[in-house]
Length: 112
Image (cartoon, rainbow, N blue to C red; front, side):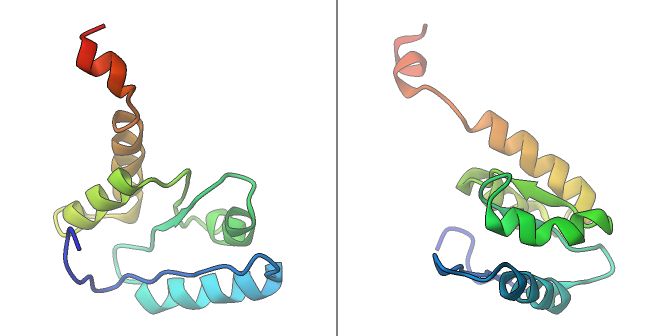
């Protein structure tokens, strides 16, 4: 809704009773579907969670896998990916954006 339709972008959902090997296959299929000359970037929610564990084989092969994904970092990547040359650079940008978007609104509004 915010950045419009996206090309070379896939999501993988996970059932609570998901099999790790099946999840790994789904992630591998999605990554292969969007892979390009600039590389592939994978976002997962929690370090140590099933999606991160299932993506570890990609990380070991050099694919950036960013754990702790939040909406601001994902939006930043989707808006900047046409202007950035590599998946690794996008991963670094996502991490910066994610850190910068974590704020205490009460403190910010009170000026403390």
